[in-house]
Length: 264
Ligand SMILES: NC(=O)c1ccc[n+]([C@@H]2O[C@H](COP(=O)([O-])OP(=O)(O)OC[C@H]3O[C@@H](n4cnc5c(N)ncnc54)[C@H](OP(=O)(O)O)[C@@H]3O)[C@@H](O)[C@H]2O)c1
Picture 1 (spheres, rainbow, N blue to C red):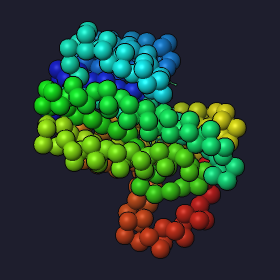
Picture 2: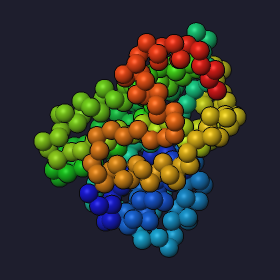
Picture 3: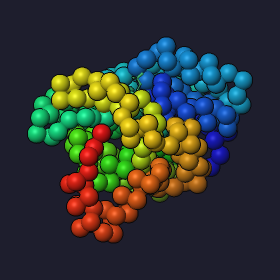
C-alpha cells in the first residue's frame, strides 16, 4: 500500500503524534483531512504542510459528538468523493487512582478514546465496504496490552479498542478492509498535560516518562511504515516495550513489577 494519492481522515491532528503523522503522510503525497477540536492548531498544522507533496484540509471535530461525525463524513465525501484510510488517533490520558476516580471521568475517557473511534468507524466503514477497499488505523497504547497504575480508565479504553477492531478485522478482511492497531510506549507529546485528574481537570504537567519518550516524528514514521506493510498490530517505543513481552511470556514477573512501579 502506498500513501501517495490516498485520501486519509485523521483525528487528533492538532498536536503530538497526530500532527507528526499528518506531516509524514502529506510528505508522502497523501491528501489528509485534519480533525480535532482546536481549529487554530489544525490551521497551524495545515500551514506546516504547505510545499509538501500532498495536501491538507482542516475539518474541526469533537469525536465525542456523534451527530457531528456523520455530518462531517458527508461534507468530506461531498468535497473529496472518497476516504481510503481512517486514522483514529484522538485520545486523552488519565492521572488518578481507580478508587478515587468518579464514574463521570471514566465515562469521559471512554467517550473520546473508545466510543469516538467506534463512531468514526461506523461512519466510514460502510463507504469502505461499498468500495471494497479501506484501511482503519487505531492508536491504542502499550497499556492496551496490560494495566498500569493511575491509568485504569485509559488502559480499559485502549484494551477495548483491541476487542472491537480485531472483531471489525475478522468481519471485513474478506471485503478488502484492513485494520492496524498501533501500540506506542512513551512518546514525547503533550498527552500528560491534558490527562484527566480525579477532579476531571487537566493534569497540567509534562511527566518525566513523557519527557524521556521517543519523538512524535519517529513514532509517526514507524506508524506509516506499519500501514504501508499492512501490519495488524505494531508496538512502538523504547525499552518500555519490553513490558509487553514480560506481560506475555513472564506474567508472574510482570505482576510483581506492576505492583511496585512508581507511576507518573
Ligand atoms: N504520547 C504517548 O506517550 C502515547 C502513548 C501511547 C498512546 N498514545 C496515544 O496516541 C494518541 C495521540 O496522543 P498524543 O500523545 O499525540 O497526545 P496529544 O498531543 O495530547 O494529542 C491528543 C490529540 O487528541 C485530540 N483530542 C482530544 N480530545 C478530543 C476530542 N474530544 N475530539 C477530537 N479530538 C480530541 C487533541 O486535539 P484537540 O484538543 O484539539 O481536540 C489532540 O490533537 C492518543 O490516542 C494517545 O492515547 C500516546
